Image (cartoon, rainbow, N blue to C red; front, side, top):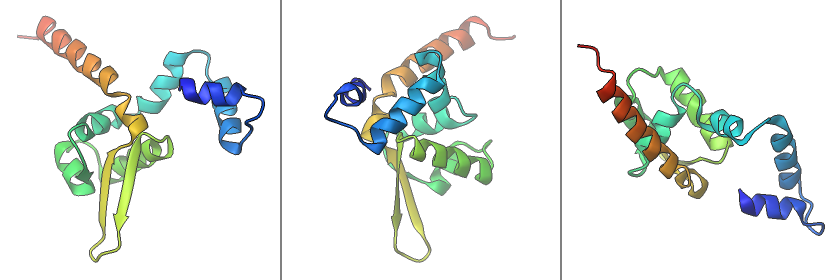
Length: 130
């Protein structure tokens, strides 16, 4: 995001993308709120976590996230794609083949997901119900 901030504040650079960044940054009261907006959907963090190891097709994601309905999984994937965290590649074959992977920007969230996993593991261990 530092690069985006540099570009946005540089007087010689004024693009529609930078205008969108200005609009988004004014929408949030703090960086945590912005982060949660990007990864805080019901299945977004789980989708990102599953894509860490590589590309998956929709049905593969459905199998590893069985609690997500196809409609909800589609919605969450679209939001992640629109926010630039996930790449979606459609191959012109029949039946349709669509693959999802982390974008470079999406890969930047891996340390956060790793920390969430570590914290969650400790939480589950410390607060297990017998």
